[in-house]
Amino acid sequence: MLSDTANRVRLHSSEEANARIDHATNASVRYHARHPERIDARLAELDAEWDVERVLEANAATLALGGTLLGAFVDRRFLALPMAVTAFLLQHALQGWCPPVPVLRALDIRTEREIDTERHALKALRGDYGPIGPGPHQRDDRVAHALQAARL
Image (cartoon, rainbow, N blue to C red; front, top):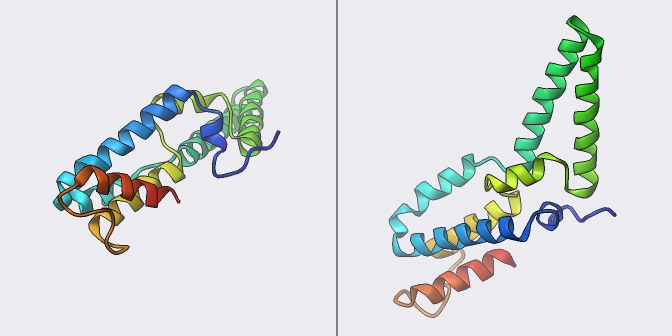
């Protein structure tokens, strides 16, 4: 019933969404293997990228606060909104799924682990962890080694 923290969103996401996200990550790493001068800029973008948890938290807080204010000042029936939102947030915390998750995954919002996979693969390509792969002229093999190291 309870999913492990690291994989719970992926386990409750469609195979299509997971595959699309993985393909985009792999494509980014392949691109940056050919353009290493752009790795630093991409790492800065990754640092600013919101993961699925952060998006859910921000949306839940906004809806809960809005529903509470509407319930307090307009009509008590609006208090059903924060109740529903907090129930869905609890469901997400326990199971890794709630109604917004499929929508967010369809929008290619990634998990923290998926973002970190790209981040660490790019750092491996940049040489942060020492030499990787068979050599600088065999880029596809270097990409595979970087991605494999990042997923360990």
